[in-house]
Image (cartoon, rainbow, N blue to C red; front, side, top):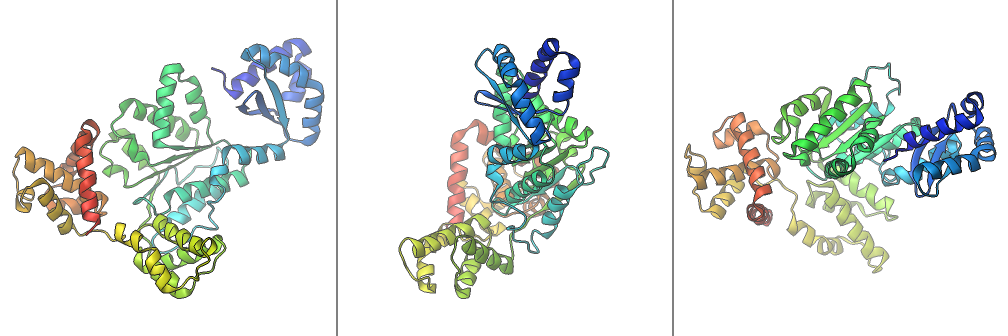
Length: 435
């Protein structure tokens, strides 16, 4: 399967045989293949003058060659450097456009992560420059801005280095690409990822126990790291606490800088509500901003969802935004997920009740099957819902760090293997969230 680079290289080789090396090297020396889009090979050249010369002299000849190589009608689309920048923004990073450092609300809970992300995006794009924050690993619970920071890095990086190659991927999409590559050949897959100048991976914890995926990620990581290309990874917890990752991947993810994002404090939440409402064209009263921020304490996405609902009431229904109106409007959001971490004891009591295993048995040294299962579920929920570290969970359950890691790994494997176990745990989460 042809990649943009291999297609251009093959075309240039044939064109050289037809036109001579001097002519072709003069014109194609600075040409760069950006992408294959529909029936076009997108090619970037430095200046508008070069673009015009290329279009005039080589469009027809290269079209014939590309069509012959590809086995279907194909033509070159030459762009100047500035046009290539606009094309890449429109075709490869449109998803990032609304997420910038400028509209990321900085507070005590995310200040270090924001500073580190900015430093990565601003770092000189120079292979001789040792990248101190490589990889940058950003971790924290869902909904607190990790993906926003990834997009902001991509935006800033493209502004500074428009000719750079940026690859953003969610872990499940990386998995799908590996599976597809195994079926059709891994050359194109490896070229796509290992030629990146900036490699962004979101939610790496979902790699799970899939060894063949982790193997490809390991080699991709090594290839980019050795070339001093920037790598940024996010997850809901630190590498050591992702029990399903192999030791060698955990080690590599820890080689650079680890930063976390925590639940925003009240001041930051108020700023978030105010900023989001202004982005939507509405200025909310101060008391309304404070009420929303005080009611939804843990998740930025839920704050934004509440603001969107209130703005819709004003713009669609024409309602005046008063405190009573807001209280009624977001009552369902607050009831569904109050945004507060449940206490460890609340989680333990609910696990005990759900699995009909006494709490003192879960805390005991019992190795009975039903007790072990309840204990493993407790570990999972204490980590995910209680936002506790492995050490904190171990202290609460009277276990050591290694035992907690093993328990998490075992329950995650059970959930993958037995859908009924995963469904039961999902029901248990809802029970806890409703209290």
